[in-house]
Image (cartoon, rainbow, N blue to C red):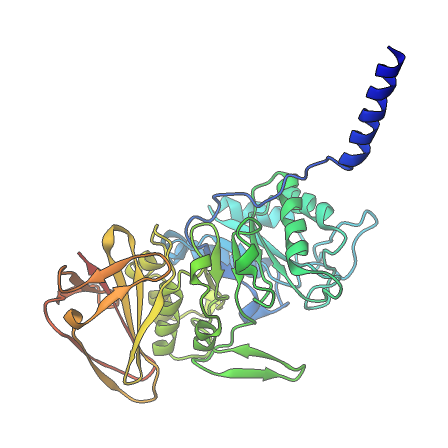
Length: 410
């Protein structure tokens, strides 16, 4: 009996030490928070760190009164610069009391009272990109702080991250948010340097694929600090073969939009069309208080928004280039397709497109449109009118940097 007892004790000891730490961390993002691309407003493109309570309240008011909220823009996200340069005695982040004299919780409650959602920014590194306290080493504490505030969205940047790996850092913060218990959309702003599309699906709801956007059609803006910002078509072209990683609740994020910032209305229209075609999250970055009626009309085009928000959730792709005019196609639900003819050149182009001589094949998701066997009705989504069907050759004169977007309905 003693031998048996001793043997059991030895076996139990071996098993116990062999197992090591058996604690299992509940990992992964909050599922189902972004089944269509999130839409809202972010402060960075126009205001950088010059943000305050008054700006947020005015933005919330205009978002509701202008029809932007009804169109689907429901997140207000404060980017870098909302906090002081030091944590408090307990190690918590401190919202800047000068910028937000009534406190961040009061402001968040105000935004929520408008029927909107609220987001904040931080960074995986020791400091944010603008030099404020980063989250490294404080992930679980900061997650509890955000949950207590009641935020709905966290944009998480990638500055000052020497010595850590992106996948581990973002996974840690994702787990921290989950542990804190408040459902929060997690936006991975890692710039695409470490291929977040390959590992981000269980970690976040969206991930940036590029460096920062710049308000131009196709330029590269070189900063003195030896980094670049990119025109919107540069970002569209930047990554190859990643559309297969994007879909409901796990989106390729092409960055906040520059619609209403420095470009002309034609380029703004093309910019918006491409973000809709790419199923990108749609975050405006302009000053609503100075917004023109043309900008508002672009941002609230219901037909284009329906392309972006289509429940199929498939990112579009470039099908062909015809004399400088790019043909982009996007499978939609119920067998429909969106087609954008984008004039990439500096001069007017006349395009002739014979549907019957073309077959749209989506190599990543298996969708196909064969125009010899199926006739599609055509709707011009910018003019909001039907324009015949695919039995007839499509012709159009497209100005420089302009776009024509059609919906094909079987």
